[in-house]
Length: 68
Image (cartoon, rainbow, N blue to C red; front, side, top):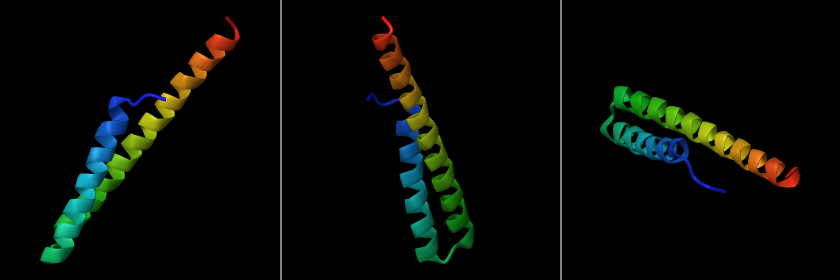
């Protein structure tokens, strides 16, 4: 299974969001916590989209291989 741009970018955004959320919590900034949570959720969604895209690509390859 390969890795695509959405998987990588999504996981980077998700990790950055976790850091931003934790920093906001440590600093007592609800705004930064909320921004971090939003970034984390957006990144997770993008990574999941990339995972599905890669699964479909693999399924198509497998299907083509089986049917010549």
